[in-house]
Image 1 (cartoon, rainbow, N blue to C red):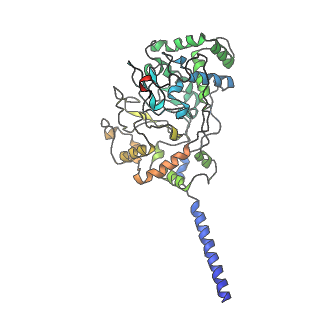
Image 2: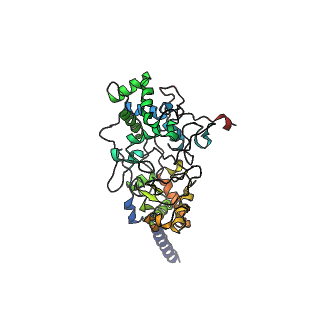
Image 3: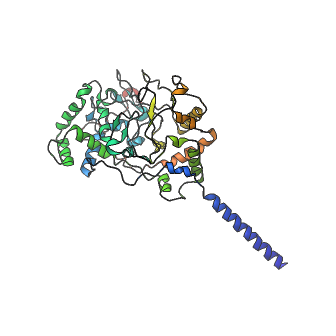
Length: 398
């Protein structure tokens, strides 16, 4: 009897051991070989040779980023539409620039108003230093693609464009051709800025258009979130992603998302026609790159804090985005002006299934890294309101 009980104990132990090993193997989730089209962000930020970052240049750029002295009415700063509270983006579908008050969803035009909405959704500045970084040929630094329509290259050049745009920062105060000269003249009249530019660039009379762009770009290159859990996974920490996140990663690969969202930035930095519905707040439909309704593939990093989504903010949640692509893969086009033959051929390779959406969203959340500088200057050299006029307009205050 004792021998039989001992034999039963040994057999039970062996079965338990085998099952334990089997379960352990199940915890090691195999990921498709197609993951090679993705990648971790570099630990080192690419910097152009003609604009090395220094503490002085970075701090000057930060002050300029938050100073509404750069706008025609002195009421809008870069930070108005790229605010730390919203992941250096904002929560509006499309932006309200000059002649606006409030921040995020509370922002509205002052009245009377004859300024149009900004045409497109405000993209985050975080990780914009990596724009153009792909697994193949990487165009970063002076060749980095900017904006939804790729109309400008480099952070330095991008930083100057909103200053010239009527609906973003210029308003009716001066003509587009005079905007930068007017702003430079303002900066030259402020002793603190004269000193800060001199210290940052090491020369007298350093307040120039080129240096203005270089200073702001230098600050933006410090806004980096390159250590998400996905980055850590790609660098070798195979246990950091959950089973659901790994399942979501496999579905992300299988469903064709990486046809456009690839490389370390989850963007091919190309334009595609996807047929997103028009933004009804615009008086004239936005026809995008080359008037083909094509828009650049956005990065998928830090999506948690950069909603709403798409070039015109028409989709509120990540679930809505994936449902849009499920409809698209099924032949349903959200924009009635777009014909099937106008769609990017890559849309034919999408195969998003409704049941896959929750797991893909879980995976996308592994791309968040909010460990970047969110601090806001207590004041700016112009003594204007830091971040622009981001107080609620009186008509909207409760």
